[in-house]
Image (cartoon, rainbow, N blue to C red):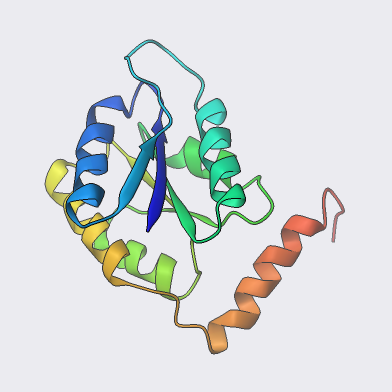
Length: 151
């Protein structure tokens, strides 16, 4: 499986660790930056990952910032992206099984190395269940096509 990974300056320390975790489990991971702790804007890196996920069929994304919140908000602006902020194993498992998430968002300042490893394991061991969840995921995808209309 192919993954694209990026962070901002607040997620740079754990990015290398996460990349190595995915690679150790047999996945290809392309690092889209940044490569230093210089201050950057997380929406720029969320865009890089999401654009690549959308262009490369059957690929996934990994986004890391201080809390994971900014990355998940930016990523979910992209039609076709279902980014899930995961702070524990359960949220990672449900994001894949019920929501068919194609981007995982992590917070370096809220999850330690042990928890990050548990989250990654849960994410990788789960897959979309389909069935009763398919209609809901289709509705999520349809929301992205609605643009700025209000209900």
